[in-house]
Image 1 (cartoon, helix red, strand yellow):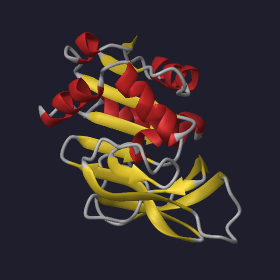
Image 2 (cartoon, one colour):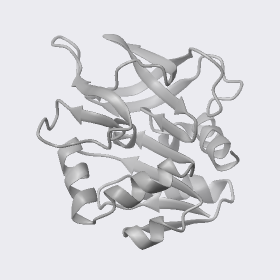
Image 3 (cartoon, one colour):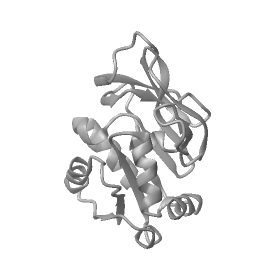
Amino acid sequence: MITILDYGAGNLRSVQNTLAEIGAEYELVNDAAALERANKIILPGVGHFGQMMRALDRMQVREALLERIRAGIPFLGICLGLQALFESSEEAPAERGLGLFEGKIRRFPAGARVPHMGWNEVTPRRCSKLLGDLKRPYLYFAHSYYAPLNAATAATCDYALEYTAVLESNNVYGVQFHPEKSGPLGVGIVRNFVEL
């Protein structure tokens, strides 16, 4: 069973449709008790970093989420869900991220058109369980902030600068693009996560 964490602002319908398309069973949850029985967790993210982190704290799910991730449960963060894995974001400097990765989410530099919206090429840096045998796929992005490159970066995108497009570290996965809006390639990426 896939658990989708519903914090009140994610792109849930598209994620649900993608899971239904591949025949994956899922449930929407918004409390710690439900997270504690999750076998896999998806955190879809749309909106503002500060609003998301405040919502997770208001729902009192931050610690349960971190406990499940540390216990080895496969986790997939989508867009803002990837950004939440870092310590902080320039979008809301006063709010703490989940802190699983060091560093700060940054806004694209002056002169870059934001949001970065539309199809862009993703370049694998190493073997990626999410991308599988995809070489340089075009996937759909919609964001104004980006995650820095780090040891967990499995693939990058180049938009004004090179940044993390796919993050993979043990059981933790994140994608800056929206697989649920990236057509058949995106469906395949979600399937790869479901079949881990």
